[in-house]
Length: 102
Image 1 (cartoon, helix red, strand yellow):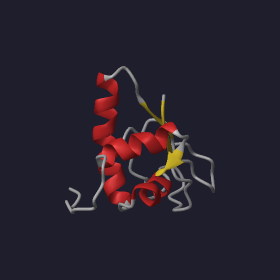
Image 2: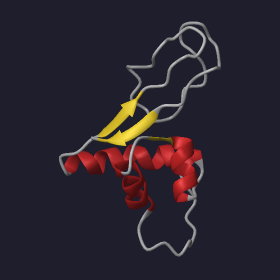
Image 3: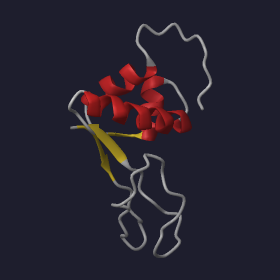
Image 4: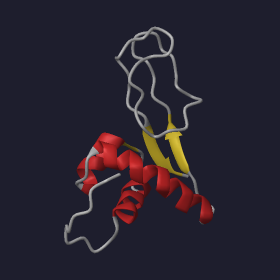
């Protein structure tokens, strides 16, 4: 669970994440820099943002991570967190999943 701290924000973290995603597809790393929170916190908030988007008739689109060694695509993975290694070849060289609002 992310830590709560006073950052002087005028919008919630999830509102800022949604605004960043509406500007275009981004990785969790890109979003963490844009919103000034950790990557781990980004994945936590994205899970909840997906639920909020569904309620409004939108959805969080996830372009899955891919193994850079064998090309395996994590297409069935529903968690926004980055996988640690390839399910096929066990390599740790993976592209980051990208997120967008669709």
